Image (cartoon, rainbow, N blue to C red; front, side, top):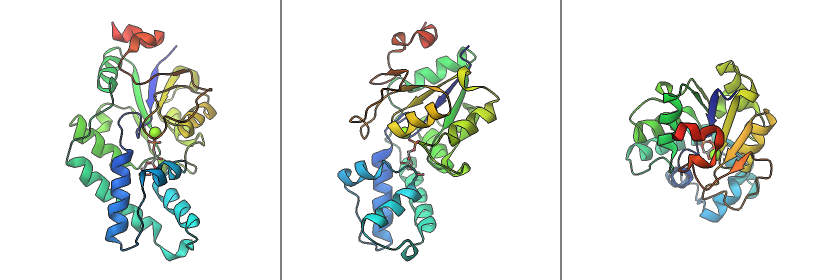
Amino acid sequence: MLKALIFDVDGTLAETEELHRRAFNETFEKAGLGWHWSQTDYHRLLKTTGGKERIARYMEEIDLPLGQVDIAALHRDKTARYTALMAEGGLDLRPGVRDLLTRARRAGMTLAIATTTSRPNVDALFAATLGVTPDSIFAAVACGDQVPAKKPAPDVYQLALRRLGLSADQCLAFEDSRNGLMSARAAGIECLVTPSIYTADESFPEAWKVLPDLSDLSAIPVLSKLAA
Ligand code: XBP
Ligand code: MG
């Protein structure tokens, strides 16, 4: 019996990665690092989940010893820049997301988040798009820095299940990326994938369903009653 919907954030709830890329680049510029991530760079680097891990991966690519840069401090600056950019507005939730959240709650379903991104970024997204805190919608908000291993490891979905007090077969996950799909499946959770701009070229054979977006719930039997 489906009791909870667990949502990824970046790329699933909203197309946020171009804003993340801008925040990374503006932070690198301010730090005088001379780094710039193009869309091609970012498409490659996004395979590494987590902003701090992504910076470390990039430093490996350019043969820069990890000790040369305070990655944690650089990432704190990036998060501050990202939340400021998000607060300027202009980014909305992906098609069908707002309606699905409303209908699911009205039908008494439990909602949760399982994301690699940092909690301030989740707060900023919901403040900018719905004018609420995530805690007013989601019974659990599990974020990347709260678990030992990021996606595709199952940790963040397992944390969400623990906080919800539910088993994997009572939940459905929503993701945009292969890393996210693998994480949900490793936690035993069926996963609906809506590919995003940076994951349109990925494959999702393990997905329960793949849809272009969440605007047509009639295609999803277990959710179509919500569409009624
Ligand atoms: C996507 C990620 C995150 C974001 C950047 O998270 O891998 O690292 O790209 O956010 P999701 P941070 O699981 O929501 O798709 O810099 O805060 O990591
Ligand atoms: Mg994602």
